[in-house]
Length: 75
Length: 176
Image (cartoon, rainbow over all chains, first blue to last red; front, side):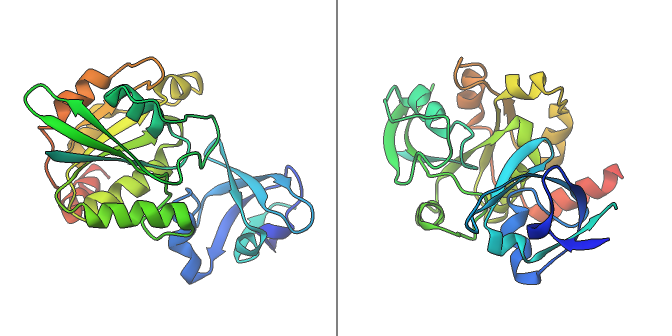
């Protein structure tokens, strides 16, 4: 199933399916690229940033950035 | 005097590196974004002296905020500088991304795999010899808070030279 990274639930895991073109290089520096496995760790309230686990370490992303990353998640 | 830029992702220990190399005392903390401006210091090498600049942490050379802007601008202003790229050995992929961007711009780089102890604790194994032969630059495991690897980093400074990224790509291709 496909969903935006921004709407993933706590502890949910998935694989990055696509990233909007102009965002690709920005998030690549944080270790996020197509094919990577991510796990949702924290979603801050009031449209705050999210925290995901990638390669065993945590990275935070603005919600607006997470909105533009499409994930493939298991049901 | 030859200049050295200390660059790396946020929160990998650049400022601890800086303090150790120069004997200065800039503020260190355990969260990202502590250095938003830069600090300068001096270090005695074995044959020459160096000016060392502690650059704010950045994920890439396409700046997303003020601190990253400072980092990129500093790199661009110091054309003849050497770069010690400090990366977190336990988060090696994103560190290498930045390192390659710096190499791509033609700077001679020494790669310091910092937090080596943390990577060991997490059971992350890194083949340093292979990394060295692919990148063709000095690669040194370090633990900034204890000082491990610093002597080698300083000795490596005169061994590094700029490398062409397409040569690195070719060598990666050979491995597959």
